[in-house]
Amino acid sequence: MRSPNHMTMRWNRKDLLGLRELSAEEIGFVLETTDAFKQVGTREIKKVPALRGRTLVNFFVEPSTRTRTSFELAAFRLSADVINISASTSSLTKGETLKDTARNLEALHADILVLRHSSAGAPQFLAQRLKSSVINAGDGAHEHPTQGLLDIYTIREKRGKIAGLNVAIVGDILFSRVARSNIFGLTKLGANVTLVGPSTLVPREFEKLGVKVSYKIDDVLPQADVVNLLRIQHERQRKEYFPGIGEYTTLFGLTKERAKLLKPECLVMHPGPINRGVEIDSEVADGLQSVILDQVTNGLAVRMAVLYLCGGIST
Ligand code: CP
Image (cartoon, rainbow, N blue to C red; front, side):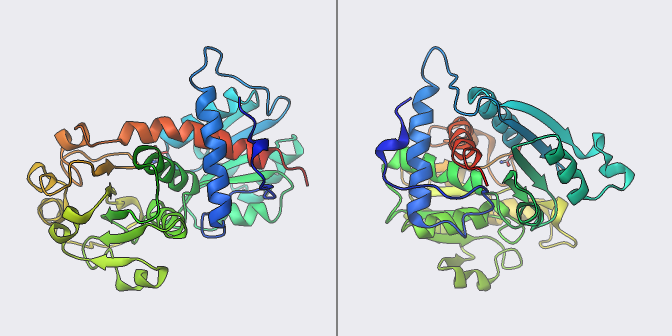
């Protein structure tokens, strides 16, 4: 691996909790470190000893396919030991608190805790109380920093830059941690972000974060360099925010017809899981402009970089 030592910045964070608190320089440093780990993935032997002797606990209190698997694989590639815990198989089901669970994991010398939780703020709560590194793998509707980083990395890889690009994020913004991490990261790096969706799911308050809000997708798509589609997050919605799925698709879905409005070089992104035929047409999801599976591939290198940077800090 080409050592990130050629870079002058020093990384001083034991935790990664969100992109809101990272500077543009820190985000850039993670992206450069990711370049080095992506290169490792092209070798015949894809493993480095960077975290040998360290133990990572993958603690997922909400379901996950991509994030859990790629953190696990990233830890294997860095030679760390890995333990997976889910809510249903932990003593959370017997009434143990999250804090006690985490302190017991630390007593077993877990060095890095990767936490996905339905409550916003759960990773921050533990990070303040544990010596172990805490990596936020998605907390409620708050942030999903490694998803934001892998989205930004994929855009930079495909378009060569972030600054000045028009990025449309479409769908259920209100309940989306992915949207928030993308907004914080992309605006810091100079992208022009426009949020699109029903007014109930895209309140104008988001404009305070330095983005535009639009309720007319057909006006936004022709200008977009990137369109990032989001799933409707029924699991976090407490009431009906629009009349029905069919109406949502008609008004905001990236249908085959609507995809014709896109510039040929516009990237089509989605963090997954996809609801085919709802927020994105199945053929568009698999089409030439789609980089959805590249996002997944890049997630591995991004998570290697994050584990390497945070897991190497001792307090
Ligand atoms: N994008 C994402 O977080 O997917 P998973 O829920 O499968 O981890």
